[in-house]
Image (cartoon, rainbow, N blue to C red; front, side, top):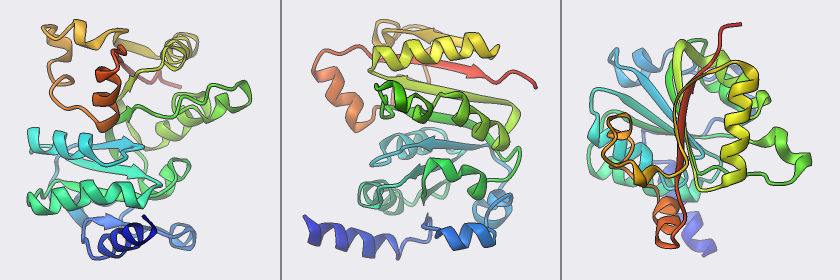
Length: 226
């Protein structure tokens, strides 16, 4: 296992669409921050990021389905991300990038108003009370998203966890954000026009949860103006 990880880390370093900025790099100013369109994608298409992208199935799947958008997957686990980076290279997808980084450091990777949408796919639910602030929909993380999202930017959440889903709905209500859509059983609404773009792509974990009979929750919302 250790050898395989080392091999994947080495291959990640050869991918031109895989970035691993160090803390020093970010403090000095990550080269693509604020200029992803000009400096990497070379187009003017929307930028959509996936937080905690894991193996990158969602990032790659969306990029294949919607070539008119740019997709960037972010995670701290390089060995997992290798799969998405390799697949996107093999499939010659020009609208995909990956960044190995802690989500807490989003502001060092993207500039103000640079991101159009954020996908949060099956994040760690952080069930214990002392760790609530580490939930990806906590006010602390929402503040980070606000710094990089465009004013009308959208945040999507997919989860199998009831507590995380209910917490996110409550956070949206209490903070005055605009809830655009929500369902506690996504696959009971496959004919719903509101989720036609959400259904086709499934992550590794989503497939696992579905096989176990768990219900998938989904919501999307816009941040309120300050």
